Image (cartoon, rainbow, N blue to C red; front, side, top):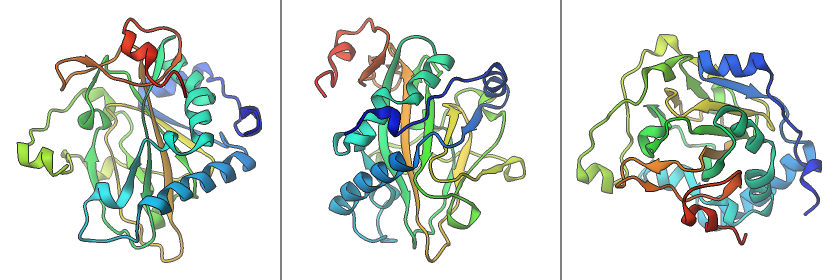
Length: 260
């Protein structure tokens, strides 16, 4: 693979963008991927997706239909973007100097997948402490209201962590964690392919189904966290993730995926 500078555009957040993030909890970075970068990542992601996934099946769970985890294990281009791309610097400007990758996955709504995904916080699915983890969603397609773009409520991150009780059966079945929210406050996050949406771990967001008959909605989901972030739901064990910037007090984090 060629040097990453040919695939990504460098990003340095302005004071206004950082202030917007603090106030509203999100912003969109336009054209973070170059045309060759978008093409390479899309091709590698689809190779991985086609090898593991079939056509949308309404009898399957949202996980089976829409997610493919650890995509950086299968795509060198994603791995490079995840570990060395401009999102690392974005995360360090918001979180601090010590950063690890916390999640990489494909979040796809292929044509035919008209299932909505209800209001939730990403920290509801993987509660990390400190509570400053970032979700980044890089669009591999143009995303709009027709093909199931994300909706969020500006400023909703200021509510903090919303506790949602799930039974053991719901956890085993990987049921959705849905919270109450006012749809009237929501705005659509429409993006062009190659743009990236960045938002706070407490941001309330949802997505509608993909009702387009000729378009997919493919998103690369990368999450970043403080290098010393722990899993609040798992006896406060350190969240394992590649250390991408700075240092960590945890040896397991320092060693995790250091060889890839």
